[in-house]
Image (cartoon, rainbow, N blue to C red; front, top):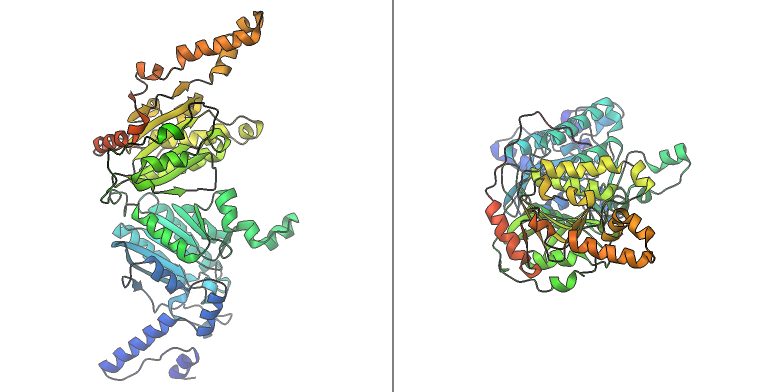
Length: 533
C-alpha cells in the first residue's frame, strides 16, 4: 500500500508535493480534522452519555479564543494488537494553555473518543510536557479527566507514563494550584494523580473513581456494587472525602472551577488576586447578636455567621458534604481572599473528630502554601469521645490539624464565638500555637472543659458529702463559671487580644488583616518536617 493509500485508509491527509499555498491549505485541512476529532459517530456517542467532548470542555473552561494547543499532531509509535493501523492525531489527549479571567492556565483533557482516553506512551509524554511548562511558567494546571486508564496494548510503557505524572504532581504540589476535574471513569493507578492534586471536582452519574472496579470487588469480597455506588461523585463527596466538589452537570462544574481559580494565586510566589469591593469595611453585623445563641447547648448554622461577615455574603465551601462538623471555605474580606475554618454546631455540636481534623488540616496546608490568610471561628466543645475514635487514631489525626496550624506562616486570626474547651481549643489555632491575633465575643467560654464536668471533678467530694448533692452541684457549677469561665478571664491573662462587639467583627478582621499583610516569618533550616500523615 502506498503512503498516500495508507494515510487515506486512516482517514488522515497525506503530505503533498505542491507549492507553499498548497502546503498551507493542507495544514488547515489537517487542523480541521484534528479539531473535529475521530468521527461524528464518536462525538454522538459521547453526547449520548450526557458528556461533552474534550474540546467542548476546554472551551467552557478557558476565556473565549484564548486556547493555544501543544502537540495537536502527536501520534503514537506503538505497533501490534492493531495499533499500527490506527494512529489518530492527539493520541487521545488535548494539551495546551489559555486564560481564565485573563490569567494564564494550563490544561490537559482526555478525549474519550480516541482509545477511550486511555493513556499510552505518547499520550503520557504530552501530559508530562504540559505539566513541566505549567511548573516553569508558574501557572495553575487543570486536568479534565475522562479516560479508561492505561492503554493495555502498550503494556508497561503506559504504566511508566503514570509514574511520570505522579512525580510531577508531587513536584508541583504547593508550587502551582492543581485542579482535577473528573468527567468520566478513572480507575486503578490513574486515580492517584487526582488524589495528589489540590482540588477534585466530580459530576454525578458520569464520573467515577476507584482503585478496583465492581467486578473485582465482587470476585474478591462477594460484595455486589455499581460503579456509582463504589466510586461515584456522591460517594467521594460525602463518604470518602476524595472529592471536594460534586455537581449535577459538566457546565456548572466547569464554571465553578473558573470561580475557584479566581480565588487562587497563579503560584506560591504570588498573592491571591484582589478585587474591588463595594461592601463597606465598617458594615455592622447586628444580626450576629441573634444568630449565635448565648446558651452553649443550642445549635445554629455557622454558614449564616460567615455570610454576615464576608464580602457580599459570598463564599465557596470546600468539602461541603464531608465531615460536616467543620466548615472550610474560601471567601473575601474587603476584596482580599481569605481561608475560613469554623466549627459547625449544627453537626455533632461542632466537635472535632478524625475526619474533621483531616479536612481542616488539608485546607490549612493549602491556604498556607498559596499565601491565603486564615480566619478561624471557634465554637468547639472538644474532641469526639468514643472507642472508635480512639482506636481509629484520633490522636494521630488530630495532630495533623495541630501540625498544619503550627507550620503555617500566613496571617492567622482566631475568633472565639462561644465555647472553646480543652485540647480542641488549643488545636483550633489558639494564641499558644501561633495565632497572630486572637479575639473573642462577650459570649465566649474558654476552659479545660464544660462547667458541669469541671465541677464534678473539682468538687466531687463536697458534692458527695452534701445533704443535697444536686443543689451543691448547681452552686459549684455557678462558682466555677464565675471564677474561671467568665468572658474576660482569658483576656485578663493575655490569652485573648481583645473582646469585641460581635457587630464589629467584619471591621475588626479586615483592619487586622491589613496590618498583617506584610507579615514575614523565618522558618528553621530543614529539608522538611515529618508531619503525622
